[in-house]
Length: 137
Image (tube, rainbow, N blue to C red; front, top):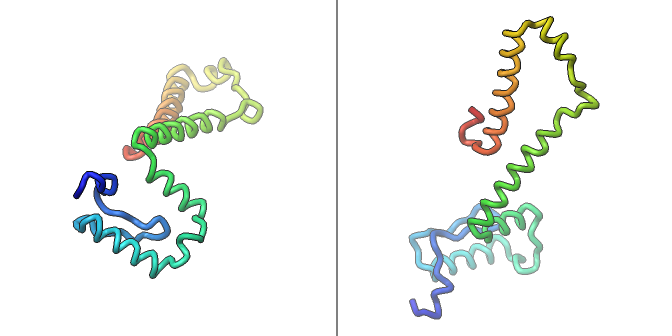
């Protein structure tokens, strides 16, 4: 490949943004390019003029994003989910209990166990947002 062709080098396979078609990554760039053009001509003949759906545009933007930018976006989305969760129990709906009355009714040991349980639930939820593969555990 000449140096003028370096910009055309591709790592791995190409995939169609409109469907689940993927090229064979063992093929050369030229073969992948020809396969993609043949696919588009056959399956999406109006691909040059037909606008992408919002979902397709989002997928394309995600694909074109630099890995650092992608990670920043993921972290921002996770932070937003945590922030949304912080608003889940508004005081005007879930008023603060009288903790002295709760302590008298439950006793110190049961109140401590209940508080620990609630804290673990919240932390498991946050963990599920920031490390979804762990399942929040």
